Image 1 (cartoon, rainbow, N blue to C red):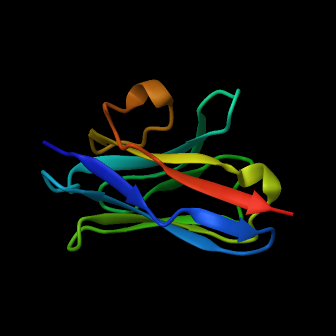
Image 2 (image 1 turned 120 degrees about the vertical axis):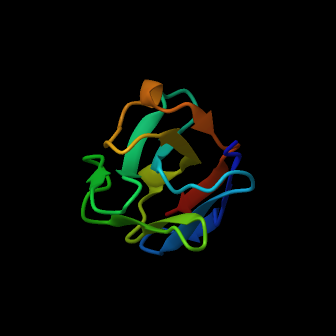
Length: 124
């Protein structure tokens, strides 16, 4: 069974970059579409990005498109979210999620397995 863990969050200044990493401590992430979501206090969980199992398809939320980039290395069982030009409004808990499927998924309800999250805080 896939058990997800996120790392790479932290406190940065606006304009800085961070790279988040999602990995599975159990079953391999191969064969799974993996997504990144975020949730700020008092707000709904928001889609950030997703990547299909082969890495051939990526999708981004409107608020991060052009600044964030998702990639994966199935040999290392890792999915990355490179976040550039961070803004104060990117501050949130970031979660990775997975679903065993070959198709793109972007809705919160599409994903069955979730990590515990990593906090990203961007100061002005």
